[in-house]
Length: 83
Image (cartoon, rainbow, N blue to C red; front, side, top):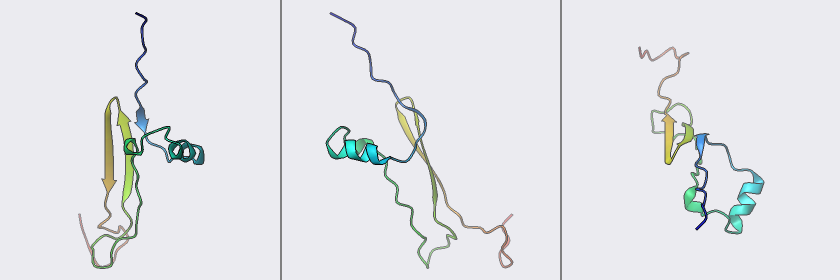
């Protein structure tokens, strides 16, 4: 029996899907459950967040990581002081 190579695992930061990637997904090339989709939105008026959340996605061997930054403090604020 011949050797069957394992599929290459991803490594490093994620990049946005291109039009070609989305076209391949539409014909069933990749299962959509294997993708991370993010839709950054403006914070709600009643929240304490000052800016949209920033996301960083990465793949390390067989693990997927999502890092999120929430902005509660404005460095140039004249009204709040957070050390």
